[in-house]
Length: 86
Image (tube, rainbow, N blue to C red; front, side):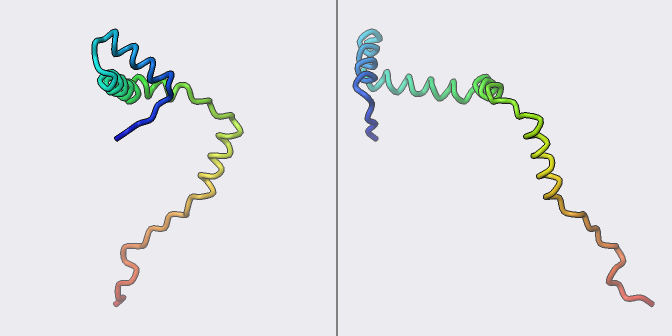
C-alpha cells in the first residue's frame, strides 16, 4: 500500500527518523500504531464522550415524544384462544 502525505509531514518524519536512527517507514508505522492504541483506549473513548455537547431540554423532550409515538400497543394472546370448546 502506498500512502501519499504532504511534504511537510514527510520532512517531519525524516527528521524523526534521523534522530531515532530508524527508517522513515519505521517511524511512520510506529507513530500510526501508537495513534491507534491511544485512539481506541478506554480513556480516549471517555474523553470523546465527555466532549460531546449536552442535549437541550427541548431536544430530550422531542426524543421522548418520538419514542412514545413509536411504541406499539402490546398484545398478549389469551392462552386458550383457538381451542375447541366443549
